Image 1: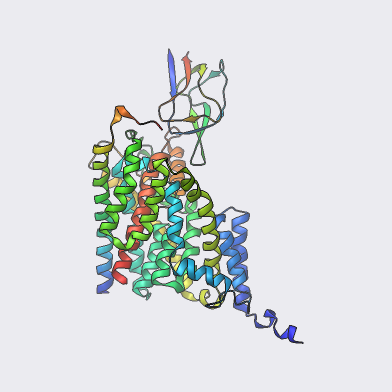
Image 2: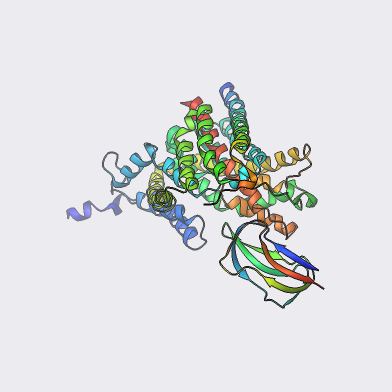
Length: 42
Length: 367
Length: 73
């Protein structure tokens, strides 16, 4: 039971932490690569 | 005559005949009702042929289908290749335009863990419970990948449960969506996100792969393939590879995947009471995931003036793009000029990444 | 007064349901956009007459492109 609780907590936190970091990465990506007026055409 | 001695007919058991019925039902659902036919048709046929005795199709070391299963699934090659194709088919634009939707994809994974906990309490081992829980992630290849690693004896049941419920999402999700949202909430129109540049779309798979693999290395086989496929798509310079990943490769791998999964479902493996529990738990997982996505959206609305339509939270259940289509439909029922489809794609694809992270975490703890 | 009918979500024009000169009412279906294999009707924003149609079946459209112009009556 102890192990299951540990996995439960690690798991949910892990998913949120991972996706929060990815969220931050997307925001940074926007800063470095997203210039609105200069939309690139193929 | 020797001929009669070698007949498979003599070794038939009632269990096998029952499995024929299941195989035929899946084939029927695939052909007539068009439920996930790309998977359910070969799975159904695989079930049928594996339950015809003495064929040695699944004989370890020598059977034809055993070889597909062993080298493709046990060696964990096929699910990552499917992710290569999925990455090439995925447009991350909806997520990049409105990044906060990523959290709805995270919330939907709560269903995975709640189900994991309940399965464990019911007597399943930690590994088995994890495999059953991941059904709630609504992602076929991830479910298969995790099952092959942690609980191969449950692979067939979990895969069939996952794909069946993915096909049934239009039936499973709307009642929960209507129960947890008010009419006013369902009518919320969302502001369009900003335009995403081509450069952002090229950088994203590279950044995402690095970030996710650095945090959860066990997710690497699936995430690396997913992001490489996406890079093929967005770079626009490898159209041959992109096209192959989306079409030929996906199709080839799907064939091997389907028939291998079906062939693991022999009567002695499948006809156990655990399988009934798995089907109930799988459904429960989908329902909790739908609910948690919606609830997080409602919660996020307390802190922002740019309201999120809570229905969009349900699309965190990563049955792509089925869940997004269901959101569109339920949203249009409340307000026919409300086009939630592209907003719903944000959490939908975030959910795929979320489920892979969840699987990676299970693997790193349980292996 | 001329009202523009804008694209509500990116996709392909599946079918155009009206012609130039047709009288239309608010909430009539003007055309259908296909996105992610779903058919999405686009509704008329006001009463009036169709004065311009700028798209045809098969065209790929993006968010906020102009689909049609309605002369309000």
